[in-house]
Image 1: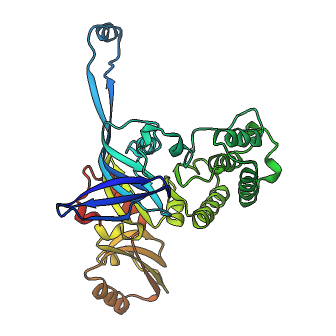
Image 2: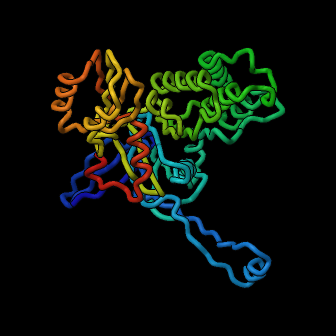
Image 3: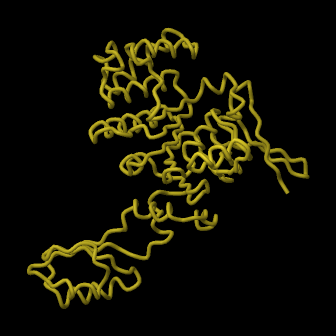
Length: 363
């Protein structure tokens, strides 16, 4: 039986995983940049009932409750991966990111990011990662953004040349050169988010944790942020973990998704395979040369939309060919298309699961 030990090689500043066996055979192989094993986080809180009587009662006795924010999750992320980290509100996404960044200590389990234990908060670790939270500001509100950038330069001990080169590159990619001297409070939400990204990336981190970076932005701003992140990930080989409730963000940027629900792992795998886990249906869109009664169509599948000459049905995969043949024979078809169930419906299904999926289903 083999066990695995992680070790940092200070001479090359890399991490290796060593397999140790009873044969005293040692072999070094590459280690995932982010390694999470059995990670859990519980929060204690107290029940508070309404009314003066209950308020006085709470002075002497309070009922303590436990909330399992994250419960025994496991996953690995390789260098350069861009992974979507999804789940409904309260699923434990932000709590997990805070543990991976060292902001929170776990209740149980372990995690390693670039070979470091995040909550040990070692200086070398903090200089190689960054976290961006869409609802939190790191820029000084009353100062121009470039003042905050310079402060980060000093915090991360960056050389003048490296700092200026990185700043010029990021400013050019995000097209905000004319806004550097404007007070942060006077910037639009989209402009502030761009500045937040620059501040977070000024030290060229290897690992980037993004928590709702496009929240509240308009469609155009969301698209520009996505384009920037895509280019940055490709050119810098940065490892990025992204949470977002906007499916356009996930579909455009992430091939792989990790989905948690009620603190438990529900799915870890290719985004395009989410629906394959449960979906036995296809979406069929039909166009007719003349209006067809709705009753004549319900026997072929579940009605998704009906507009007389244009109809959308959800049909079972198993007998799809047979039913399409019947439709072509008896109905005045002009055109039809067959599509997969939208991926957001598959993700919504996983959100509704109360228990994590078995490992064999999640692959």
